[in-house]
Image 1 (cartoon, rainbow, N blue to C red):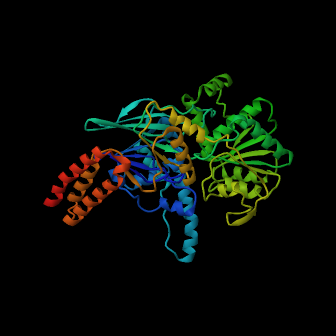
Image 2: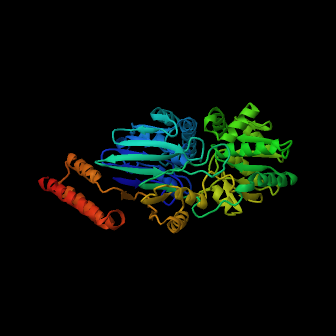
Image 3: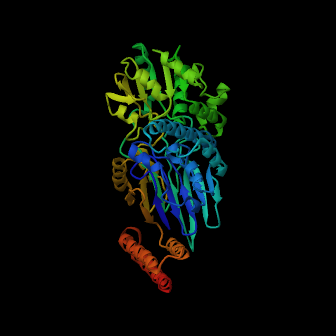
Length: 529
């Protein structure tokens, strides 16, 4: 059996992992790369695998860095089943078409310049219509149920506590007389986060593929985040400015509304206008309020006490139209504006930054992760001159970055989650983290648990079981394509060389001898060829 890392390897975005059992190909996530221009280039062109050969796509959650290339996958021939929780399905039904619309708008803007220059025109990665077509392949399931995909593969989705519907995925794969268990952590949530539950503890795994977003950091202000939020708002309003909050449309916006509601109930925020200026965030908030079964106990009780969703505040205004959004540019003070995208690379937030970054009385408050290469990351890192919509803006506004709203476990909680395994995994693969974060967490996990840790490279494959079904399958594919004997023998030699190189990392001597014996049997096929 083989696993290949097609994304989120030494980077936070583009989550995409493929398990090849030799008989079945299972993909976990198919996310979009975000951040620098170089890494976003991976979104274009053909996939480095054949989408038509994938039978199942297991989706951990709806965030675009995990789901964003699903419409492209379907466009390129995927006809399998996409399995996700019901909430993830609902969220993808609005997020993927929105992403397609963004692709169309970006290409339209670029093509205007290319047309004037006489250059070849571009096509979007996918369109909103492609996204709607992809939704017919989704199947929603509940947490905690073991679902048989076929006679040899079963899966279970567990609450990851990251966003509504996010999942830790357990996969059981039976081959011959053995059953191997692989666990994908997905994105693990911050413990004691409002609205949703804490991450579920997993009992055992043979192999764990785990996120490492904050593998080198501890959250600083999680204990008193509402007090800090109030302090920032009050100080900004006292100076006569606005608080501009770039926020992910899903979960972060809702967490902010929940905390602002608490401050209003305590009487700390009065006569303040709160705007959610993101059509996607508005739709996502409505989906949240229709799915109270995913809320934690405290939020469900609050819902029952209020008689309505605690995310709908008395001072809250949803700006749905472009005209309503533009009107906010005239607000000079006393407004809290929550807008997407969370990393400031697209969406209405760029207009609000353009009108407030140069004002020393305003505050730009970051409440989520900022990937390398994004406008948000440059602002958090202290750049004093940025370009927005072709115009250079001098940064005079106060820049704040709060960890307390993070939807990711920090280093301490990631280690805590691993240590709760009753039977620890044989190996852990660290993904979904920048290189420094991956290696820092790997070092700490090794010290704390003694479990071997691997930080995979982009496109790197690993043999994770001693059977050779994958090898046989690929060899048979080669024979079916009527390749030459030399090509088949060359492939056989490549596999043998790879096996010899990796034996000490991934197989015992006994397992290696069994694999080698099987390969020698296969050699007779190449001789006949």
